Image (tube, rainbow, N blue to C red; front, side, top):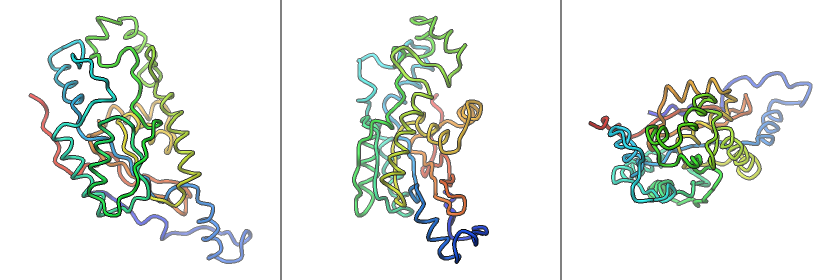
Length: 265
């Protein structure tokens, strides 16, 4: 169950007497200064065909995930992924009234967004947002570790030397590269969606980058959480604006509202 606290309605705001004359004026001033949405909910897409293919390719020690040249952006949800998205939509419907939904323009995130939205009354708009798209894998796209070792052994060695966080494959992105575009997107939220409730449907790396920026992680913290928690399909990560601290505070992380799948045999 999600832990959605009642942030912003209780607590001591501190002594602002020298700044304004009354407590009510203090509260109104702080609310007027609020630059963040009231609530920011981030959902990873449902299980995709590529998720399943990747697990099997790794298990079978194949060199690549796809053999039919399907672009990553065109990867659809599985039947299970559609069920996950529908269940997530019903769950969110009871807890939020979204003003706007932003979706990565990849097919799996578009389908997830549409299935979630279908469960919500007073359907909010869906805006396709390229800044929350999947990390770009460049020449390594679709390759397993065995495939990289065979085709790009020097890149595998460079990745191990530089580390997962900083490594940028040829034609691709590093985690800090993704952070730059998510930072830009957060700027849009502060300018145009103050005191709104916003849903973002995106990808696993992007979920962690949101946390890295909003909670000011360094590389070590990012890698620690990355190693500890696989971002689950259709998992929910939610932030709520804290009036006292005047920033978005984490409510829940990587929470799902459906039964998790058993491991592949």
